[in-house]
Length: 247
Image (cartoon, rainbow, N blue to C red; front, side, top):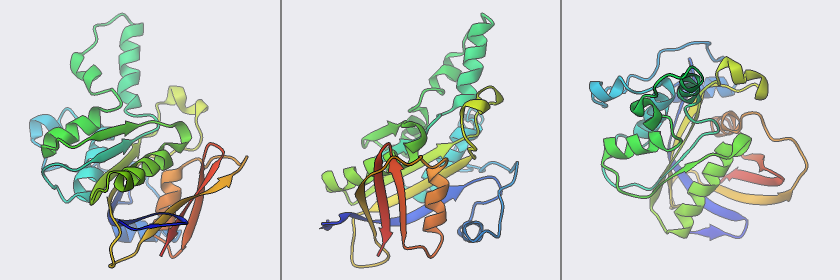
């Protein structure tokens, strides 16, 4: 696995992204060029490979996560290290549980079990019979980038051939809307690989510190960079500047 002095090198073997009205690579390139907007509503991923009994229990948030994960790995069965990240997790499901408590109603064990932050990663491991280590990340506004740094660091530190990185967030319930920025529903699945001599490579590095404001949606900023001809993208984690460069 090669490592350059300017950062950690890796490749994106496959990128799968989903947002309302923007799903295919062609649509995402059109979006990145400013030619295709998001829709207010859209049909959710079909997830035909997931058994109907299990599929009916999935929330919209879970469906987007699993769609990105399964498509990025082309429904690979077996062990594959993974990192799942989300700022809010399945907040709509969690909000329903909080309302049940406030109204002194009984809580559903199933709903509670599916509301925790690592629930989707657990479901993915069950569907794919994956026994490899899986992490669940939550890091506020920087959840996308922290998760990506974690995945790339694991790829290098553990000398892996591949690792799956999945990020997803769903628009928060109305009762929380005043506490967050202009967030969008989006899911991203990246199959990361150790660098080889074929295809485009990425270099990730830290460029120092800043007192600037964190982006409102790092996932969308990344997709704009990935699906455009731009060669470099800089964002931040707290006061640190992080850079991705295409080579």
